[in-house]
Image 1 (cartoon, rainbow, N blue to C red):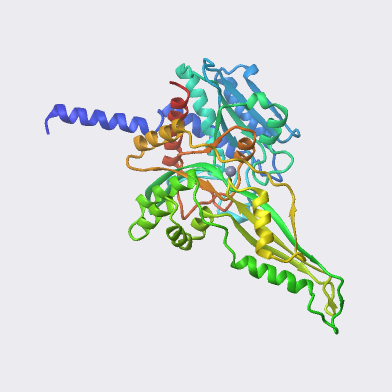
Image 2: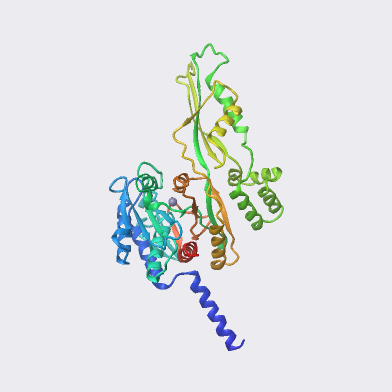
Length: 461
Ligand SMILES: [Zn+2]
């Protein structure tokens, strides 16, 4: 190999590695903010998010952000949120970068180390919130400080909001509170949030997922009331039998299989990652082929749930005495509904399936419903291009999730929200909400760089 070629190869290698993680100074900054956040005990039910908001504000002020661009406030004093605005030219509507600062509770005795001490060990950062969601929170702040230092002038304002009480929701949820009380602070053309991350299997990177939509939840109660009577003189009209027959019919029923824009794109990508004969079925399922969708739905519970609305019995109650005919029999039925299907459609379908007017089908609680975010080509393209730059050959895959994040409230409020992180994790060892939660050190810095480039490319034309 001649020297020139060698020198240019070395240069290429240096440029490539320079692109996959941030400069030393920015890595250090992100790490130190991350450590500070993780060590603040912001447990959903026992902790406070206000110290996290204040820590973020201190970092921003030290970096020269004016007080007037930083807002701290929330539903109650210990559940504060922080919102900061980095001003652009205003040519386009702002972009919102969101992360939650509360964490699922963690007990010292359940862990092999102190969950609220940030520990770097064997290539991982350990601590409650290292995955969910303080990595993204720290990165948003560190990257904003980097843009400012570099003099980056975006063509839109970049807003970072670190918010309270995503885990478990409830009255102090920061996103709901901000939407209700200070919409102008977080109003944006779209939002980037948690919900999609990089999938790794056996040390190999599989895909960089972007969450575009989520199912919504309806809780039903099937209820049968009956005049009852003495158990020594049974009659055919029995509340428990009515309910049992209704649940039996529900158990045998499946909602129609279908794909939407997001799940079709997901199965199309899945086809490229799998071998025959599944490969063909996945491709045909993506195109809406009934037979293929049926076979794909049988492969895994997750794929079944991606292809249809599901309703399942989760709780039972009934009867009041061993020797009395039941006056009440009831079941809780939990439905996870495709975003394009309506509450009404699900309810009338269940009534048809049950086909017994003795069984009352009642919706319990609220039904918070958000539309799917459109698959914006600017975002999908930027994610795809940057994923391929940092992790060559790894596809980015749009996904719909079965759970719920703060994205739901934002989508309902007309702010399309995309779950994207670029933090890669072993998909068979996701420790969110569990013990010894961790994040790969290299994954963290690569995600930091990915999000830095992503936000930059979405705010400069
Ligand atoms: Zn989370």
